[in-house]
Length: 359
Ligand SMILES: [Mn+2]
Image (cartoon, rainbow, N blue to C red; front, top):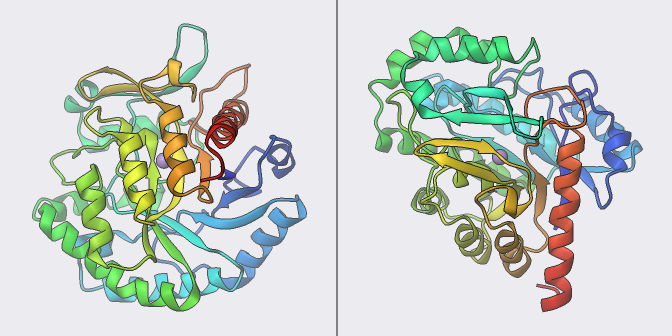
């Protein structure tokens, strides 16, 4: 298990690389050039600067999260071919600098979605929180405005302004797109990029939808075990793999998260993993708990044991965290609580390894 940490870059992440390096067992970051809009080519020179910065701090960067997929690709518009060609160019540039895995998602319009970014827990810590009843009374534009307001001016991954600017136009197009159409568009995208991935040695890792159900009547197609099976079958290549996210899949109690890790790990199709906990509060209603099993609803030991048994060398990161000890920053991406998560997950891994031997 290679422990990594999401880092947004020097100009947009308040957490210095040196602090990340000081977390025990931390070997690398999952990096991004977040000032490029979906569809733009990432220039090689800037990728080189990012990798050099990370290496100088004593860390490695083998995983990029995310290279966003342009909405026209998801909608299957004629302009998608141009954006797929750009995507391939970015992949080639990344491969020249040692990138092995690229995480992306195929969520229409909205990336992750929460109804509160700083929900206050009994102990005074805050966490990301979601209550579907809250969403039902609101239109998509109201959710966008509320999320922007609550984030205190910080840019949020997945909520880039250029994506939100076209919201109404895009929502109208999606009303005519069904699940199978969206899956066909996903297949078209993968068929367009996987040959490049195979040639340059990059593995694509799709992140599940978060939360794991349809939003605003628009289908989402990466929610369940069967959805993940469908994705890996769209193009049957190891370069077409998964970023299994415990918290996203775990938002739906019907998903058996440890079993999903075990199955797709055995099938050799997990290229990256996000390991965090959620606490179910009711139907489509949850909060993001601390990583510890007893703080939430997921069995973190079973998840780590599945990773140990089936994909022990995978790139893992603690996913989101709570805000504790007076820290402030980007919603979901604190230093302290993610550091606690990283050490806890490594403790579980060490324990399984000592009991069972190396995977
Ligand atoms: Mn995740």
